Image 1 (cartoon, rainbow, N blue to C red):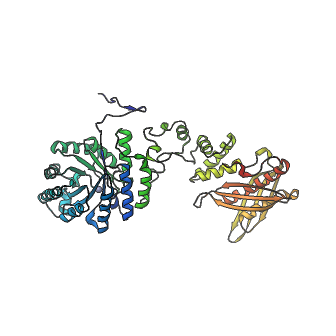
Image 2: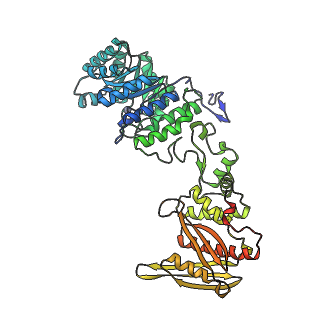
Image 3: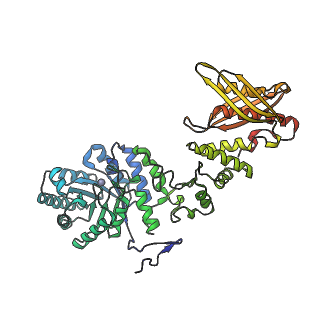
Length: 527
Ligand SMILES: [Zn+2]
């Protein structure tokens, strides 16, 4: 058996398939808007439709015109302004069909339940009546000279013989395309393939598939329908829709483009921006690990993966789809699993010139922060880099900090003690203050003892990232005998950052006096 026919791209062996052309039908504004809790305003709808139209999506299902006057207006406006096909939804009732026709859509999508459970319990009708309603509805649309798509709702839970009857009835009444909806998301890919293949043998009409993600199979089922010969599939941006949603536009389109090597005609570089727009307007946040558009879709943290991707992105990405194809970005994420490669890459890209010692120390601090469960942002990384790269080299330190302890509380005076080697002599100081930071900084300024009186002239704290575990960047200015120096330090502990910055500022101060020619301003190495 020839398992691997001639289909290789970028070193990947692909299974053969017969898909050459697929029409993408977007239902973000119809099924997507039926997401629990989602409602798009008139302007939201126009904005989403405009982007879908510009990207080249073949059919835009703009809404359900009978639903409300507002919805009718939105569908009419989208139908009037879009280049591509605009579709309006209608039940098989005449007033629904007329609302869609009056909205002047290019395609009327009419539907009726076909499964026994829905015919009996949702419609209180019979199989015979449903066939009649189908024929009447499709004929009504066709009599007005408008294209018609018919959907037997809940098709995947419908008896096959009856499904054939209803599809044939629609085709004989003039339906241009028949949609097979997996309304409650219960089919599996191979079953969808067989269902579409079997229907094609029985009734010769173009087929479309509408799939739901209740078991996470929506995109796979849509693609299985396409492989079986369906000419069109229904998708929504971010997969929003009833319950767990629909097949996601980004997943289906990028699979077709990248895995099937089929040109959908869609400008895929707009996908990420459109996804962000729909995320905001729908109020449904994307999980970080959402395929293609999630924050993590092209992110790497582990040392091995990040180092590989820096060398060649195909090492630990699909290779047939990159962030640039969908308007997204590749990110090297810093944390517990970070290696020196990504730290160097990230810093050099931002204009820093760290030496090997800097990179080692910065990586160590990032890993330690990540190991405490903290998300390490780019801003955190740069703050850590600033503080590591601006400190006085080990050999030239006058004060070498060894230990800081603070105790504080609502019932006691904040107190701090510090231990350090000052010119190779072990010293300790303790002091009190209005808060633990002030106590610690007073203790540090006393470390020089009688040799030098150090005064804190400037002090401010910035939280680099949000949250109670934010990294604080502390800036300290010191003065002694008319000489000034400053330094900054970053830590997730405000007291530690304050003490480190003060010690560093003192070291700069002493070095400034002894080596006048050296720049001491910690900001000189900023990018
Ligand atoms: Zn649906």
